[in-house]
Length: 176
Image (cartoon, rainbow, N blue to C red; front, side):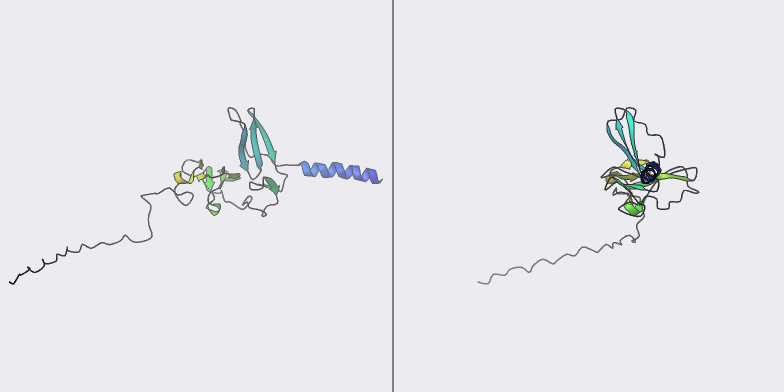
């Protein structure tokens, strides 16, 4: 009886643990170099010989880039599965300024397709809809200077002051 219960539990428990979420879109490795292709809340994908190798987290777990492990939402150093509102937003990707735009989320048809990570040392560039170096991205996601940006401080006022001239020194008189 004990062996039967252990076998049944083993099958049921293994089935529950093996349920994983999938990537929110098709991963295409055609023409890609071998290595890490994408990281998202759902897990990550490597490209190996032009074929995607997908590593998905179990249902109810999220992927944390810092540890490269699946964790419970709200633990670790990830904002995955925090509410993001896509209702009323145009289809596209949106940066998360809360983590300095290291992550972004994708909206399509008013639905959130998931949160994605940019590679190390990059942030999401909303103008180009891709991860880029911070010096190529305007604030708040990057450090690129925008000469047309509004400033909160009023422009400094300068007043012209007339040039001051100093009178010449008195003549030297020699008495002899």
